[in-house]
Length: 178
Image 1 (cartoon, rainbow, N blue to C red):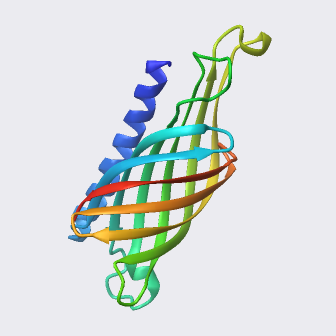
Image 2: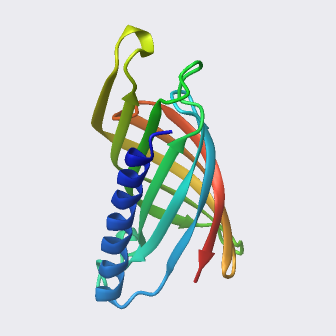
């Protein structure tokens, strides 16, 4: 595991989180949640990560569904990037916007949206007869389900990467906050 790249990814997520929290604070909105992800991607294999969500009331006077925009920042780190490569690193940062669709009389809501994907691949010298690293930028399409349980919630999500990590990722996790 290359800790330098892991630190870079964590720093990127921290910057994204700070931007999300500051935009929420400017708008006077206080619904911010942090949590943990676990999932599987057809490129990444098993991955773990962190997530920050914030309800962004960017269109206060708008009665459309855009009034309830949710910002989602996510960092994922692959635990098994490639068989036989113990020192390979794969990680990604996702910055998405989603529109929630509340189910009536339910603690659950669906959401759908999209955003940016920054994927980092690092393979040491000697892997596949050469070493290389690459950072790719792509787009995401996401959809999921949130289960709101007060200060604790859980989620399940499907993310399709178009460029960047270019994979289907199925995951879930828990979130803490109000």
